Length: 152
Image (cartoon, rainbow, N blue to C red; front, side, top):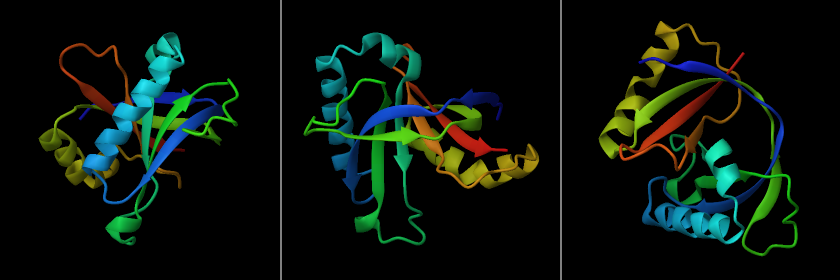
């Protein structure tokens, strides 16, 4: 599978969090709620530029599924510290290997199963940071997601 290298800068962001099993209907509902919040704040240009990031904060092999944290993040410099629907924070930038995958359960699961071999085959030096998913609204009819692997 091909990938590209991308450098992310340190960014301010807003996020929503769900605690529970990854891939749950609650995570799907949170994405709908987050997209509605983004639309209500008229972030169309920023959405096209940055997309929405999804971050699984815990390893389900080491954390009970009901305790797994999943964050949806949106990069913005605007201050939403008083907004009750989102939390604020920072994303540390760095170098990422970006893999583009058709956004179906089958293709995403295949990506995760093949990830160790892809890392080894491409000799990627992974740094200790979460793998991020990125969703952009301008991808056309064939929905895709990008997986950003933190590398040195």
